[in-house]
Image 1: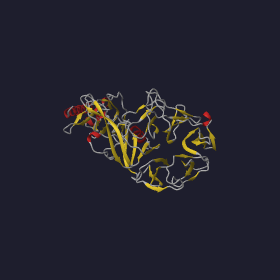
Image 2 (image 1 turned 45 degrees about the vertical axis):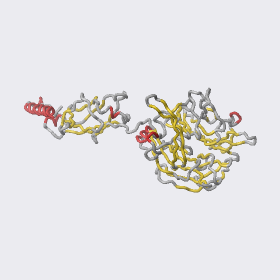
Image 3 (image 1 turned 90 degrees about the vertical axis):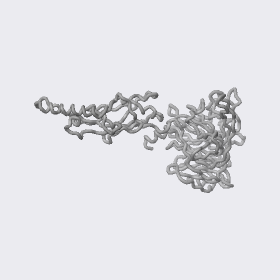
Image 4 (image 1 turned 180 degrees about the vertical axis):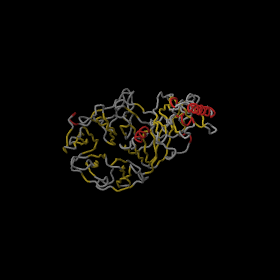
Length: 501
């Protein structure tokens, strides 16, 4: 409707006012000064079948949705109907192309891709009694800028191009420590997780010289401070700052690997592997409230031949019964094949505080493929596994049956058909990379991946002829620096932002 219709409505109210003013007091009509919006609702968002709740902020005169629409909803709200718009007068206007006030017709679709300003007229304003009794509102439809199901990666910086080999990382306090041997010396590189900046390199004291620890874990015994514990040369070392280490008296000799920590009902335990005089490996644990080395009773505590022996990665998940369990992977000395297949698999081991068991399936239709230096995380209520080569990520509900993760939940892959080489800032590539370490920050749900400097190589199946859909295999090789990356699922970023974390 054009401005002349608004003038007509206003004239009608003014005439009505003149007429009623000539009547006696018993026939007076009171005109409302109310120029507020009492209810607002958009039509169902097509394609999603969802009605989004809108908040009317009377102080700031804003109407907005707290729960943002899906990332591609801007292609829907360019022409959408206002389902409900309730006012005392029923007269709401918006500016037309000429800048004049036109009565808003909610039976016509409008474009809400950008904020829209509307004006509510009270009956007093329309009657000319109080022309200033109007109120302007801004309607803003919030739409996600990023797909909530996508894993978003950000290149942070380099750590040190002298790191060219194996490394191990761990979160200690609000910092991440990355250990690596450079030349013949073991160093720790550390950085703040809350105020990320440059990396500090510090020479390690007290650990065997020139050797990367085989495992590093944090644990706290009752009556003592939380400590870092590491294994090297079949001994356990401890540290309270991650830099200065000394042999721990809490463990005997022969400890090959620290496996995991697990807490249930205020009892925490640290699990590890020791090799006996008979050459057999055995599972042991100690608890926070009873510092005593205990042999696991299941299967006489013997470690199965296909249990991981290095590059241990574990995560803890909570079952529906509020019982926490460990899921663990690592490199093994023996291969496990999928049923009816020559394809190697990655076996997940579970621990509930009583025994270690093979947790994942070797079914040829639901197995996790073999990864070198596998990493496992419990993330957004799902279990994920990835490893060297970084060509794929596999996902499972509870760590038993596996499938390839959604293409949105993946690592950066570049288009090699355009030529050139990867640039981490604008054209990143993860595939083919090997020496790395990974930590997951539980406070921010940021996944940190740190690469050593090196050469990468991988094979990719590409389309050879578009007409026939024939494919061929190409090998890509490239050099890369010691890159530091941070990734997070967009949905978790939204949730944490809403929680003001």
